[in-house]
Image (cartoon, rainbow over all chains, first blue to last red):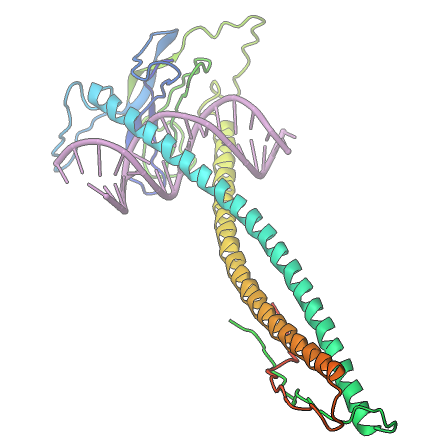
Length: 167
Length: 167
DNA sequence: CTGAATTGCGCAATAT
DNA sequence: GATATTGCGCAATTCA
């Protein structure tokens, strides 16, 4: 657990931005500072002169920017925030995935129900038709006396609603 | 476009692995090597003694590991892979989210359909009951010949539903 | 302007 | 051995 390091990016036509870095630990006290475990100093390459053209080379605040105490503090905070953010993000993704599963199940349930209802409906309709036929027969073939001439509850005037449900 | 950098992590009880880095920019060839342009040496933290138990400190290949040509190449490849992987990951997340939306819609459709079927079923059942009653009346009160034809239950709201469910 | 949250990026360890 | 994933830190940017 120690810190300090350096990094530079500078990709493409990126402006030469150099930076530093280091990771630190978190295992224990967050406020851990350079424990000085077993680290060694080593020469590093770094952009030589900061000298700028129209340079307003501002930036000092306690030891030239990096390794500044405040800097470290900010970094640490940010690192924390990043971690948090990523955790959430991951969690959210997981939740979403689960939502998918739940919805799938729900869907199956609903489809099953629809199937059932459809079947019931179909049975009932058939029953109805049969009935209608019987009545019709009675009407058309009133042959026997004891017949049942009477009524014609012949409802069912071709009311077929073609419900195409769309939404 | 240049690169180079370094970083070490060392998190938690992570084995103190520190590294170094540096980046510089110079915006020229990608293959930029240590340009030596204007760089300065700076102390860096590094794991103290590499001394290992069965230590086989191998690693040379053109200038001690880093800044090795091959190293750079690998890094670049990896960076590419990483980018790709992340893209996919992101894409997948998006897809999942969309799937949720689709499933939600589907669900609503299904529920609507269920509602409809239920209603139809209910109507049909009522019709049935009424019918049953009529028949019962006829049986129980066959009294007059032309007798009790009375009611004409004319309910009949749409029965035949051509439910075409599509998806 | 200050600080947290996000996002893109590179490194390195690890998994495939 | 090479690519794919994953955790992590840095820094730029976006939000509050």
